[in-house]
Amino acid sequence: MTLAGESRLREELQQLKSVERPKVIEAIATAREHGDLKENAEYHAAREQQSFIEGRIQEIEGKLSSAQVIDVTAIPNTGKVVFGVTVQLLNVDSDEQVTYQICGEDEADIRAGKISVSSPIARALIGKNEGDVVAIRVPAGTVEYEIESVEHL
Image (cartoon, one colour):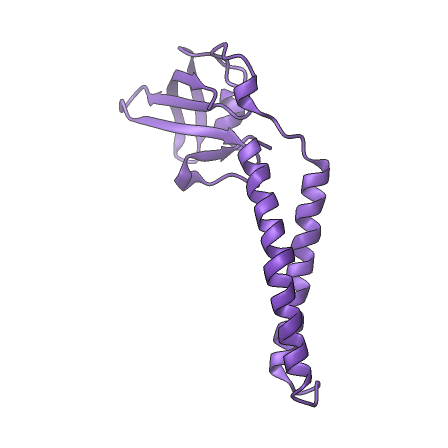
């Protein structure tokens, strides 16, 4: 995972523990005061929300404890595509440029230009160098991209 990805997960964990968890505990307490818990929709909704929050906290803590965080800015830029780099590609056929950052699965957001290291595009690019032409198999067929630049941002 990248430093930015780790930072976002830590922020989400802090938000869940310090804001969301106390809020749902208060909602459960308020719902309990309304009496019969069997037919109390507010209580059941609050308990369901609590279950979701606790599950997400455990999931994030598990990911952070086993994550290998990579600071791509500390790696010398040799022009080789590795995890964490930002790659500018040129479609050989259409001359369309695209830019992707190769990141961990939890960080992937294609609209933001971040692709998972396990995506077909990233797998095809890893290990290649600036100037290489790479054929990437996509659902519509095979697209050839030239690697224009590799940046360690």
